[in-house]
Length: 251
Image: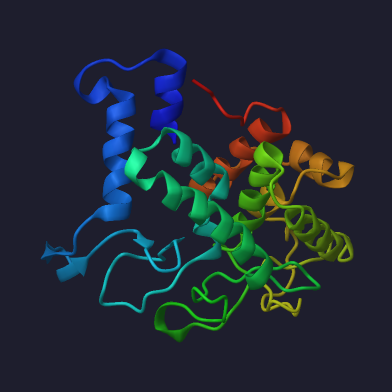
């Protein structure tokens, strides 16, 4: 997506600076890569395309040695809409279908009361994931609400995304300032609240439509320390989004 935006903002040059061509080549490989077996630092691995062609959903991993499943926080329908316009022509319908599939998936995989999404799940939205891990709302899942919020902000294509945001905001608002960062999907905490329970990555991804959540982001300290790479990326992305600068760069 960054390469497409770069091409639209500054134009494409030659070689690796041909942003449009580089983006198209990468996108083609993501969807159409043939299965390849080769040696890695972890031994021999077999990997294929990053998207499941039947479900039109992103895979948790293209590694064929693991069960084929997905991660709700990997779904980016806002981007798929643009790939359907700017990507290789042969795959444009696929990306339109993938956007629709992900929007529908958000509503199926999240809890109908809390709006919490699982870290991992199967393509049919049932619980599952690597190693048979149980469904739980944790670090990966924090990103899911940001993804559907950006999609609604850019495209207004699926009103259910607003409902999802209302649910998860209501859930966290009901906890006041005493909430955990990890829950079962029905809202049972799996980690005790701490003296600083508001992990900045979680605060940053809360849909920024209510003043309380915007203020929490604005007043949050700049991330530092061990997890600053994760917290910091969500911190800056959320500030960009709230300021209107996380936007589409058209042709």
